Amino acid sequence: MPRVSSAPEDAYHLAGKFADGWAKITDAKALVFQFPPTKETKGNRQAGQQDPPALYVELTLQRYSDGEGNKTAAEPDTKLLGLAKPDKMTGALDAVHPGNYPDGNVEADPVDCGSELGAEGNTVYAVQDGYQFNDKCGWMAFTASLVEDGFKPQVLKRTYFPDMIGLYAYFETVTMQKFRADQTEDPTAFRIKKGSTKVYPYEQGAQTKATAAGKGGAKAGAAAAGKTTTAASKANGAPAPAAAADSGADSFIEDLATAVVTDTLAPAYTGQTLPNVDRLMVNALMAISKHKPAVEPGVKKALQDQIKNKEWLASIGDALGLFEVQGDGKVIFA
Image 1 (cartoon, rainbow, N blue to C red):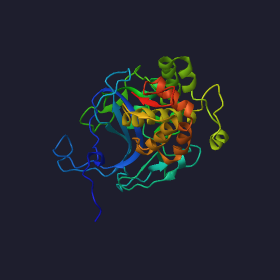
Image 2: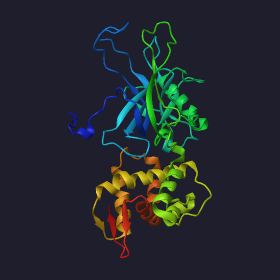
Image 3: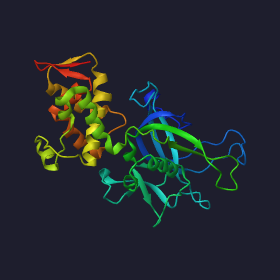
Image 4: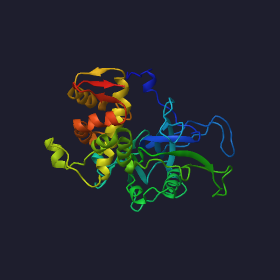
């Protein structure tokens, strides 16, 4: 019989109400989910009534105490945003399923991940040609608030949910007007507060560079500027050439590498000393497998290549105050 873990880290966190506040999205995916039966009669819903599985976007949000980058100690919350309801006649998700862009390649056709309970993916798969999301669904209400706050619509056209990872803003639930005669309560919409966005995910690389430049001076800023790479230079392990601007993919990889170093590597070695930068690099590469949320297989190779850039690795640690490389080559963690 399959075993079940009792470790807290392996428990499923039921998505519930999200109290308004600052947060950063750390994971995003499409998910087929079914809420449990209602506990009590409310409106036209009887106690014990259970809706069939539906398609949602599941967002994982890390709480922050403010918009200045001060993370709280609270465990991440999850929020489900409706994408598509099952067919009223069949009770099945006949029109759209979770889907996957293979290896995160948004230029490829998505692969159907099915409609079984628990099915998930990094995008959606339209079973019916010409399928469109209802503009009243929770996900579209959320993306409307993104666009109002300056999020690029062309990014949303991809419907690639990892594009949301890194969004840092003030999240709120607002009351909306009824749009159907059978609604017994005013509907609500989960959205970001207008004017609150601190980080757009596709600009994270630029923000990381600005932070590094401000904290570490000109030398650290130049090194943390991340020097974009071509596929050939990455494959050969050659130093990354300078570039006028990062591509979206390079910016994402650099920011993800920074997150691995900041959130996974540095906390594990607080107050410790490593013999040299080579050991630092090895430990940083090992931290990839321990990072949460888990790194997608399709980006792992590019992430490893970024971390293998020892000049970048040493400078980002110094710039962000995580560790310092001494004159004798030893690495001392804060």
